[in-house]
Length: 177
Image (tube, rainbow, N blue to C red; front, side, top):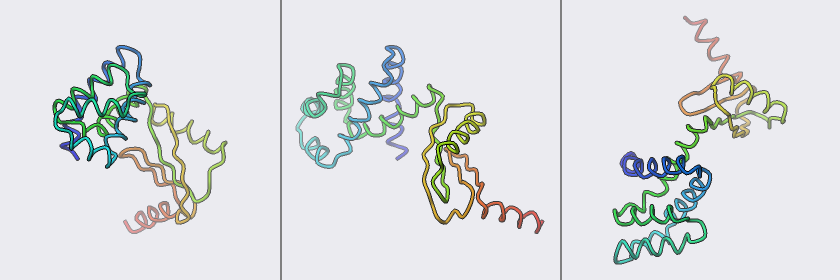
């Protein structure tokens, strides 16, 4: 996976810089998202692999994505096909999305609770997390009955365990020290 990331990074960076320069971040994000899904499709991958030349691969891929790719997107596909890198498109799309989130100062936060959070709770949580992370926050809420009470909040390497079980565990550790 890290090798694929290393391969994909220059393509994602170049696409990102072009998108920032042209002011087309959203359209590039959409194009790469779609192209990444096409490249990760097993049937499409096997058909592309059977093509005799890189030019033929690029032409077929562009035909598959004709409605979604603009001229610059088609050029990216051609360059990646010439270098035998079309399989890296899903990773390019992910890296581009990461660059865009960093540029937009956005962060995705996973919140796990025992019961569904109501809108007021979500708004309050978003406000607190935006203050803590100094970024716009997008919540991904889910429920897990094993979380008896409280919340587990995850964003990247940061984990905030506000569950009753977590608090009791920390209390037990403190008392044993």
